[in-house]
Structures are given as C-alpha cells and as structure tokens.
Amino acid sequence: MDTSCTYEQPSYSPPPTTSTQYSDHLIHGNEQQQLVMMELQQMFRLDKPTLLQIVDYFDKELKAGLLDDRSSDLNMIPTFVTGHPTGGEKGTYLALEVAGMDIYACQVKLKGEQGKLAINQYQYKIPQDLSSGDDFTVLVDYIVECVSDFLTRVGTQDRLVYPMAVSFGFAIKQTGLDKGKILSLGYGFSYPNGVGVDIVQLMHERVRLKSLPIKIVAIANDAVCTLLAHAYQHPSTRIGIVHSLGTNCAYYDKTRKVTKLKIHNTATIESEMIINTEWGNFGSSRRTLPCTWFDRKLDRESINPQFHVFEKMTTGVFLGEIVRIILTYLVDRDLLFRGESSPMLNTPYGFDTSYMYVCEVDQSPELDDTRIILEDMMNLTRTSLADREIVKKVCELIGTRAAILVGTAIAAVVQHMAMSDVGLGPNDDGCAICK
Image (cartoon, rainbow, N blue to C red; front, side, top):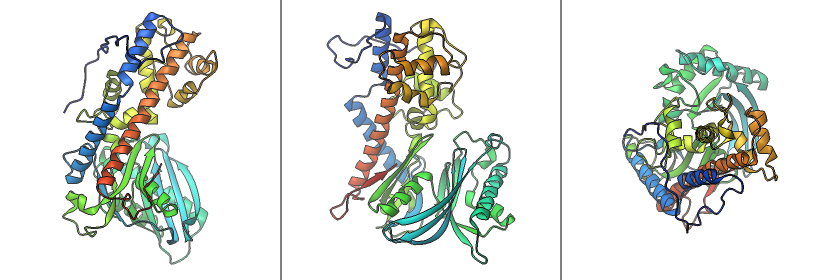
C-alpha cells in the first residue's frame, strides 16, 4: 500500500474545553502559540486505545512474519541459533561487528565460572568515501584489512584457525548459521551490488586472499549478539534490543512456531530459536502506526521512503529531524522566532537529536541551555522565552512518543512470548530483557 502523502498543512480542531489532556499548556506565549501547541499535543500524544491497537497490530505482524516472507512488514528472520547460554562455556573466539560507520574487532575469552569473560577489543572507523560506491567488495576488503590489523595487534598461534562470528547492522536473510544474503544495507550505506550478496561467502573469499587464520562459523545481527552476550552472564535473558542510530529486537520463540522453516531440518520442533524481528520496518506498508503529517514528510524525503517507518519515528538519526521539521513549520506560520529561520535550521538533519536531551532536561527559569542550543548551535538570532518553551515542549513530545512506541513494541513481543510459553513458564526464572 502506498503511504505517500501530498504536502499540506495538518488540519486542526480545537479540543473540548473540558478536556484535561492539555494541562501542561504554555506558561508563556500568545493565544496562537497556545493553540498550535494544543494542536501538536493532539497529534503526537498516544492514548491507551491507540497503544492497545498498536500491540494488536504488532502481534499480527509477528505471526504473519513467522508464517512466510511476504505477509508482514517484519522480516522475522530465523537465526538458526538454538539453545541458551549457561555461563559455563569456555574458549577463545573472535568477533567482528560492523555498526554504522564503526567496526569493532574483538577477541573474547570465555572462562565459564558463571559468565566470567575477558575481551580484547579495537575500534576502527569506516571512511566516509566507503559508505557508497559501485563495488561492495571494496567495503568488505576494508573490513578484512581491519581484521588483519587486529590479529597483528593481539597475536596469533601457528597452525590454529580461529572461529569467528560476524555481526552486521544490515538486514540479512539467513538460510543457515553461517549463511545469509543481504536484504538491505541501511545506516547510510549505498552499494547496489551489495543487496543479495551472501556476506559470509564473500568474507571468506576475501579472508583467504589475505591468508588470515580465520573461519567464520556464525553470522548474527547486533540484536542477536546483544541477547547472547547478556545471556552468558544472565541466563534468563530472552530478549535483546538495540536502540540507538537504528533499532531492532531479537527474541526466543518456539521453533515449531516458525512455519516458514518447515523445509529445514536444523533444529528439533520443541527447541527454541532466536528470531531477528527487524522491527525497524514495522508500519511501513500497512498504516499500523499513528504517523503524522510531519512523519510522512520525513519519510518521503528520506533515502528509503516507505521503509523503516518505526525506526524513523523512534531512533537517534531521525528524532531531531522530526523536531526540525516541526520548528520550520511553526516558523512558516509566524509562530516561532518571529518568523525568522537560519541556514542551520533550514538544513535537513541540522537539529541534532542530542540537542533534544539538553532542551528536555532544561529546568532553568529562562531556559538558558535551550537558548544556547538555539542561538549558539542553530545560529538563530535572539530568541524569546516563549520560543524556548515551545522548542522544549516539542522535544518532549517527540521524545516521549518515541519511548512509548518502543515500550509498546516490547509489550507486544513479551505478550507473544507469554502465549508461546517462552521464558515465562512455571519452571523459568523470569524473562530478562537486555538493551
């Protein structure tokens, strides 16, 4: 279903005067500013019936994604990781994570003894000019070069091939523990010939060319790695969540619930397998999220319109941009900054999400920290106290909505697990969630 929308001002009907929903009205500001803040509050606040409906939608998407690969916005990717860490595992392993523009190479020594471990880690940066191109192999070669440098730093033993697990922040459809094709790159990467590549096979080819003593034995999404790492020290962990520049969730489900896996014989029917939901794409095609006019504008103008809508409404890359779009809308209506803008405010993603936190926690009488953000960082001319209060409340609205939506998605996953008797049975110690 096409979720595009023409560019038009959002409609507004004043709320009933008896409503208590808007008790946190502006202390400063004229009547028009008061009304527009009520308008925004009405658009971005989520009532209980809406949240329960989102939980229901999410649950339906979970089940549809487990059934096949066509009926849901959630990819629900089987990871082929079964069983649960006990904290008694031992051995030395290598791990590689590509998260955004960062590469983390790790040497992990599992000592057992109730989850004791030691980590030797080094971080590398992906150059900006390698974020896009015509040949995906160029990026993979750089990643392999970083691994080679790391092995030089930590040292290796002759005649020893090190098992390594790899984690990419890309959406990958796995067909085995060490097999998976890239569905989409995301995180600002653009390599048309990268989509559809078996990333482990390509990594092995480039590793062999470098003659590195490595065998990739597993591929895992960052949310899966988060779950497993936490479960090694806290065995009751059943859900892993990554929420920063992007967002994702992995959880344990009964293998028998994964209907689309019937053609495989990789696990017994009563086992539990980690499922990578790829929930950042929730709401992208079925209007299951309460998107506003501002959300649809951001989506249309993004590099991947009609994809990752949940991510665009809740994560660090996009929250500041939603705030910026709202602020420019208020400027155009002569309701903010005396109708004046600045080059920085007019620049897409010019209002960094980190600014939101500063404004939200600003409790000074004159909102001085907010003034610094607006006048020093955004290069706006002198702002009024009413301007600063409006900005603070806009940040609160967007931040609060994001937190509530993520909490609602977690509630849907936990509800689904409870119905499947995963981690919440009479013999379980509870269900830990790690982030």
